[in-house]
Length: 144
Image (cartoon, rainbow, N blue to C red; front, side):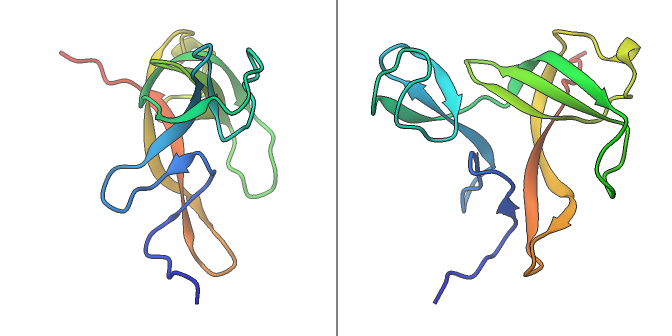
């Protein structure tokens, strides 16, 4: 008998949802060269070392590296939205959507500090009706 699902499912394998704790993104760090990657792999893409990657909890803060404002998408996907690539503090580069910002280039500065936030995956559900948890980026709140 399969385990019964008690909460949302992660939208990707590298999003971890601990039973007693906050969700986080998991990367893998090469113990030979220090390169950090998402998802599991048997060889480092930077130095080629085999079986030298260790799991690592990635930072929930980062810097906007590049973005694109998407104006056309699949049916049922609300546009425009901002697709972004973020360099996380401490290593790791992740693609996701930038939220809580107007999709206007004048309002999205390159190098903007962002936080990783975890939210419902836009109401999407699997065929059994289970909801998904996803990750998004949002501008860091300015401390006053």
